[in-house]
Length: 412
Image 1 (cartoon, rainbow, N blue to C red):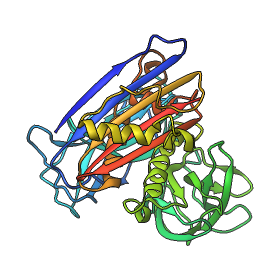
Image 2 (spheres, rainbow, N blue to C red):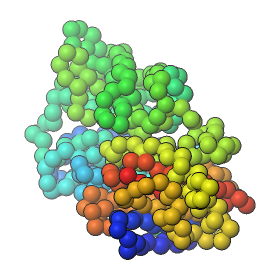
Image 3 (cartoon, rainbow, N blue to C red):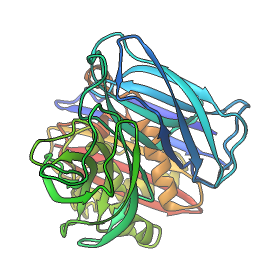
Image 4 (tube, one colour):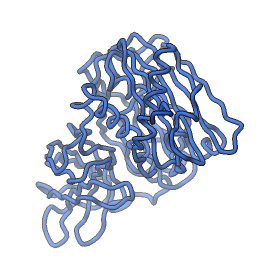
């Protein structure tokens, strides 16, 4: 697999950011993983270590190689509040893992030396290629008092969909583990419930649904709750959040967040329609921004489609396909709207499936460093996608000969 990266700036009376990306590979399948945990603590001593197990399931169609030049590893990170990694530790697979198979990896992780609240994240990586799109996050504390907090929970999900129809329902299961020091009461005046929320980009709840425990849950015990959640009526990108609550007392500080889309399901409309693939790419971009706590972008159709005198994002993608190479040779003239700051990402991928191409390109873009500190001094694809100065995007997608050409034009 090879990639070509081109970055630069324009000597104009504006701030112009751009970068380009090309992916070529013979792999016809995507990497996809599911994670479940056993015994992961919610509190750590500064610089201390703790052991637990992670079961990873290969949900893709490529075999994960335990060795070779690009082995598959399990990465575990303590993540700071700004999204940067405080630690990065990795574990090898015990053997190759074919599609549908799983493996349990026993890990001993070391916490950062600085106390505070972190996100502890499990994420598979194909070394030298890309981090997986799927990962599992749990909030943990470093430096908490001995014995842990009274209210603490750990969550894992099975079968949670990534897209919903507006107002539609979907069923999946949530396993909750009591990692605190109090027994969770299933009844009484202050029962413990599982709350599930669709969260808007501004942090407010679009929906709030709750489920009771079947029985009391003592510390270190787990329970699996089968849920059927109903999505909001308004289409868009949301955070689907699982969070325990002791009714009338407090919500738990720990919660599990995953970005989901409501409406314009990418799986059914892309490949299949140009508008469906554009919506799919917009959903992917806004999922990246939601994960980083950044407001979603709106699609600008003039930027996307162009005008009689301006090629637009789509015209530039066609142009690159005709040249047979990615470029920025029409930027910023291909923006087609007024702006004071603009950025452009372009890419090419040939996996044989248009949606897979778009996901792979975004995965590789977002694998670049994109902390606040990095993006303040560096221009790359991920920093363009997460730039808070950008509020709209033009998207041009052109697919020919099993190759997808992508242009993303960001403006304020």
